[in-house]
Length: 169
Image (cartoon, rainbow, N blue to C red; front, side, top):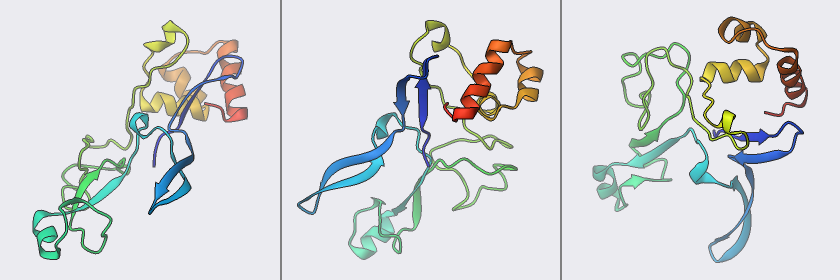
């Protein structure tokens, strides 16, 4: 799973996209192919589990240790930064196959906060929102916004309604 973020200006023009998915030309086994993929993997926040082979397992089967697509032979996890479920606790999930690898989540945390540079207005460039605030805004949770941010102006309400209508965030 990855995060796809689109930044629009007030007239609805796309300014920037992170995590864009689409066709990419590549060469596989000597043949030119077009494959669907994330087009900017370095700049995209990806949540995934990457299986691997330990030194011992790799040696036993004559393979290289580390990340691997030999699913039957894999015996360890190189990376697991998937967002944990609601009710997560480090003590409960501290066992192979359950604990995060390469990521840290606090007890009770079932979200991730990621910072993005917002193109356009310098005033917005430093604006930081928690994962909960982003969720509230994109879902139109006006009760949460009013309780935690304050009353919105008519212009702000119209902005949210228009975005929800178009599902353009």
